[in-house]
Length: 359
Image (cartoon, rainbow, N blue to C red; front, side, top):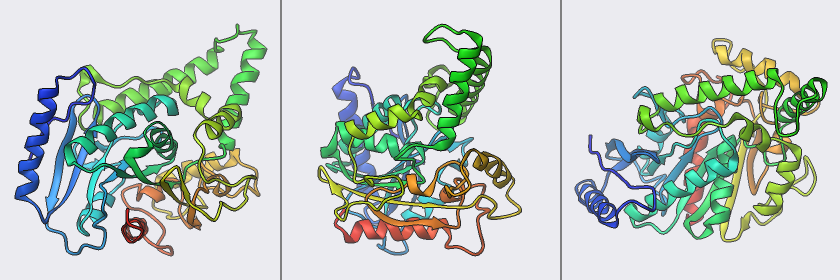
């Protein structure tokens, strides 16, 4: 396994960055025809975890593929479990160069978006590519929009997977529950009632554990966790503000159609998502998503966490796959519907779509 450190923070010496670039150049020369998969994280840079000769060039895009996880996400946990389960491997077998990033497991879109943007800058520096293709699942799609908003010249395309571009009803319910609890308890403005504090503390603790299990996150450099920041990101008011500040080709009305032109500020936008929760009776996570789906109105079809109407941006590949929120990243351990296209095939086809479009 080849390892190389990619400095992230601006204060890191320039000489270290150029040593990293040189190391990558040597490695690239030795595997010119190979598909490669890297794990990235702000504290430690990027590490190559897999390199093999592709079976085809079907997914050999002009720009590298950069994958961004969602809420409670990771890059590779415990050294073997990829967040995008077996998807990077599928892509590199077809000629893609793939980077899986790591942002704070629990935090606001703004914080995570800044972390993602830092990693994109490093990836473009060491690969020599002036742009990347972003693939963001759930909150990762919003992080990708943020990164493109502050650094559009580095982003060729964004593909969002089950991302709530127009809000999430489950987030509204949680925000309303906290607001009511604060009112009942007479909590001071800017503070939280005891139940909200327990929920926030639990999410922060889980986030820290997931961070510690993720590739490239030393125990003494775990990323900042902020469940209250995440909850704020899900609020109705914040979605209005976010969509005004970081515009994207989303429908003008809820559940409407996206604009005919899927390009905005030079960035191509694509999306796909699913509906349903119990897609494989052997998958225990399906039953959790069935419970979370009850936060949605019955006519607001969803994947357990995100509604199909909210997932639309740019060119909508499909928003009705028989996939729940975790199926769309081929989790839990690939236990997905046997009656629907396999998620790995959906990603493979989308990356080829990007290739054909010149991305």
